[in-house]
Length: 449
Ligand SMILES: [Zn+2]
Image (cartoon, rainbow, N blue to C red; front, side):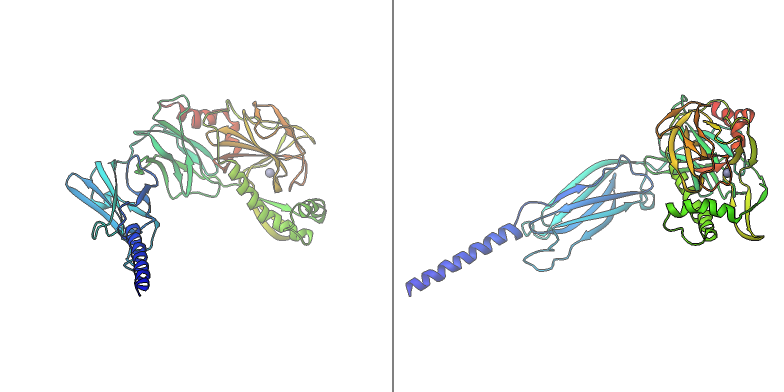
């Protein structure tokens, strides 16, 4: 009997010890949650996304709250409360990440310093009702003033399909700045060799845009405040000519097998392949060209006017609308995004100007192609080459031979297709061969202080 009681007492004691340690470990634990702020803002402006990660491996998280204090005003952000599932195991949530979108202007805050306080609590019973708390505090400036932009350049008469340059000053260091034309953004660069608050943006009016919805200089400061100002401008409409191109069986039989061999998705009769290549592949290649123009040197690599293929005949201009006919029937349409020049076969192709080779390879309808970066977003391209004599990464001087003309890609005869791009937008090269145009429209705007 005594022995039995002894065992019972022992089991009871053991049970109490287990319960005790359970209570001690989970319910009466004294260690507060771990709190981690994902990124600490330098300043908070129009909007800031505050992300906080909290971990409590014992009793679990019971709440995560945050507030901003300015003097005696308190701006509470929506707290996250974790429901207690069972009394013996709290919320059961050991880890979580919460985000708040802080909008000081909407909250009614004023500029100046604010104290950001984040509090995470666990489900421990040690501090009745409140749990163990971990408090994180930081003083953060609130900046609600957008930067001031002062337009400095004056000549902004730009043709459709033409280029331009805008220069301006910004009152504070921007996190992003450039010019918005319609839906396109033309990033600006600190003016090479200029005052540190001066910025320049190469811009372009896409060939098919006659009246852009907006033409604005944009500057975003490090707090996210945005300033957008207009600048005086004039868009000069240019109506390119319409050309007809006859597609015959000889051309199709000569050119399509190469595309069929290279692209498994373009199969069928030579005419069917041509229709796909001329639309889908053209679109894809133009997209690729835009991508190669994403990054540009932050300095002006070019000088003087651009060099054209010497002793050549001008065959087709920029922006021309091309109607394709097959046996007298209209089968398609495209727009010519460069200019065509023909000399003798396999003529030496000079680099239009000094720059860096960013692409030197086969490029679909354009055949063997070289793309060069001339800095600040200005690029040139050379297509249908029979031979490429430079490699990606090469620095090439104005006039250096970079390849030879040919008829690779969708070309019907030996010629050079020369293209120019401003931040990936195809522009009319004619302006860049013209020293006077460059002086009046680019260098004049660049030289303003
Ligand atoms: Zn062409």
